[in-house]
Amino acid sequence: MVQTVTTDNGSSNKFDRIVNDLAETGLSICDDFLPPLLVSSMAQEIRELWQLGEFRHAGVGKGTSLQLRPDIRNDRIHWLDTENPSSVQRPYLLELETLRNYINRSLFMGLFEFEGHFTLYPQGAFYGVHYDRFISSLERVVTCILYLNHGWQPEDGGALNIHSGAKPCILPLPMQVLPQGGRLVTFISDRFPHEVLPANRDRLSLTGWFRVRP
Ligand code: OGA
Ligand code: MN
Picture 1 (cartoon, rainbow, N blue to C red):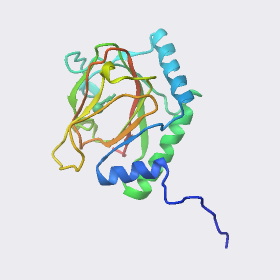
Picture 2 (picture 1 turned 90 degrees about the vertical axis):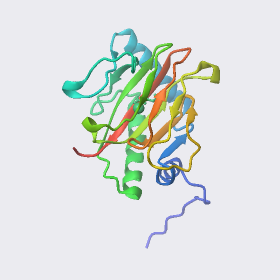
Picture 3 (picture 1 turned 135 degrees about the vertical axis):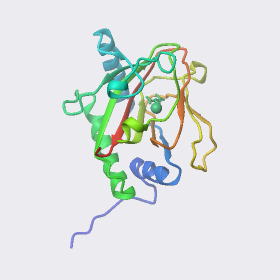
Picture 4 (picture 1 turned 30 degrees about the horizontal axis):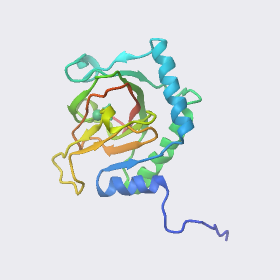
């Protein structure tokens, strides 16, 4: 029999920590999920796509009920083609694949695929309180937000404000999370109402969802 030697001295890896957090509280905040170089390459790609006019106003609702509602959200988005990711997106999508498998193995959620978009909130933009899982998008089960901002300061605003939902949670809520580069926020999509507060500078991220089969 082949013995595998592990150097694990009781400290768990980032995927284990996220899965444990999700199981315990439904919410996980993981700093330095990606190395800074990759974070800046993704931010750079957003800037290039923006220059090329590849961003659209984000809407509210889905399919035929999709509406532009600048009173609710005025961020701009660029959907990823996850089948054909750019060389800059690929390493992150591979990490998410690993995370998806960890979650499925431990929490039996049957997560099937990831969908996501680059997001740019121009200075002053916001997204009012909402849930990520609504009647028309029951497939979205776990939200993953990766922030791509270098050196974000509290006075830059733009916090993700997470409120408590119907289900009791041991975390002190509401909780404000700054969109610090490399930080990954993961949460159970139907558990927490949340909002993006207006920022004093452009705010970049990659937002997405692990989905189950419809
Ligand atoms: C969203 C969202 C939060 C954030 O796009 O649905 O809630 O911090 N984003 O960017
Ligand atoms: Mn949301």
